[in-house]
Length: 73
Image 1: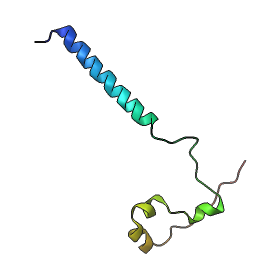
Image 2: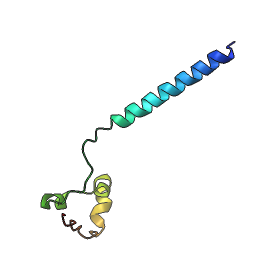
Image 3: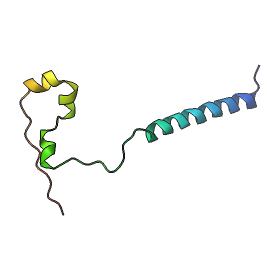
Image 4: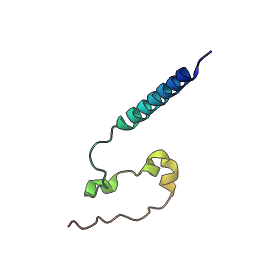
C-alpha cells in the first residue's frame, strides 16, 4: 500500500511526463518562420486546403474569387 508522499510524488511525476510530451509535440510540429499568405502570381494556381482534402467536391464548386494582395507599406 502506498503512503501519501509516494502518491504525491507519482502524481507529480506523471504530470511532468505529460507536460514534457505536450511541449515536445508542439515544439516538433515542423513549422519554421513567420506565417503569411503567399501573394506571388505562382501562388494563385496552388490548391487550397479544401481542394487538397476533397478534390472531387472542390472541382464541382465554383471558384470563390481571387484574393488581392494587401499593399506593402
